[in-house]
Length: 548
Image (cartoon, rainbow, N blue to C red; front, side, top):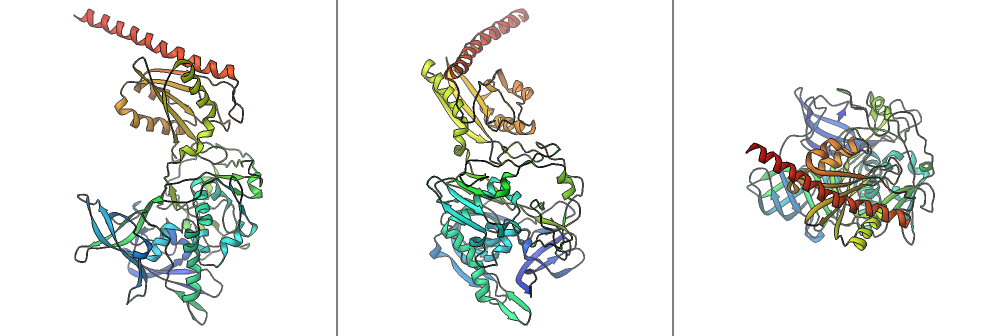
């Protein structure tokens, strides 16, 4: 993360008030230390996602922050939160007592007083990209940019033309962003908190001639029982933990009980470009865009993404989101990018403020949150045919199984963890016992017809290591662009058998005879495994006899 007007290796030691001249964008003051000096700086408020106390900007050592105490605590009821301003600086904080876990040295759990900068809570929770940061300071932006329709079996959110120039449509390719944006738009508590930022800015800003200034403040969201992880400073004398940077939220509740579809006309205009679409070229050495807040950006629906630390999010009650090409919610958009453009975007200056027609640099942006929610159960319908086959095994042969789904992991430089519609791709894992032996069936979702991947039947050498090895398999499947890592599987499996799929249509429907054939082939190979083990044992006995 490189901000052009700051020196190399600038350690942020303080963050100040916002200011704005006439019709220019909002800026924010900050204090920093570098080898050159200790000084006061300012930068565009659009960069706020990057700005947390003790972060290092323009690092030459690939170091993003100075170490501090790590703390995890559970948020109390809203009535226990106290809002106050420091007498000297007038910067606004929240204060409350919480049960916290320290993990820097020996892990300890105790009650502490939390001192949380209001700007840091808003930064970590709301300011995930430049659009959400800028829009927080403007009244009624969400209502002007999104039209929400509550339908019988889903919500339809229309992305309106007023939004397009400010929020790049490429953000909607990220399931995590879609979920958070829907959460922000539909959850009344969360939306009211976000909109209180602009309301308090308008109510409490100071105006002196052409300059407007404001000490950031807002009404916090109700985060009762949400766990927050943070870095900061622990004052033993007062038993106070002063938060510098929030790094994650878990236990979030959305209260959204049906899928959310985002619609925009341009989602339907998919065109496949030349280039490798399943892998991303490695980033060249020292290739990093520089944030330049002195030059205006040109409009772009695919801004350059500036690398930065992310805030981790974990929801208790996740919901499915989709991009749709029509308002019925029946057509998923397929947008295929040219990976080579990734290299070109990393070179030169970018600007994260509102783009303009006369802009001279590329548009820049951030992907500030990483959704770690376990939401694989939302995609169970993609394995309908596989589950019907398992029912046949149970019905015909009495095989009792357990089935779990996992989302394929995101691996840097590869894209097949997402389907063509930009929703997560999952893998199904079925365990069962047959004649005292433990078998595993693996099935990857290829319902977007990207490729055909055979069903795997495995017996594993060491089940104690299965979870670790299964994690590696999932990663390898992505890296091999939807191919099984056969050499690795041979290392961990006693036997491996692959089965081709019967013909499966778009609705996961399979002819009865094909389902039965699929199940029968698997069952026959259970007995083959038994015979193979007998032969294996005979060979071992022979070898032992010869050595005696």
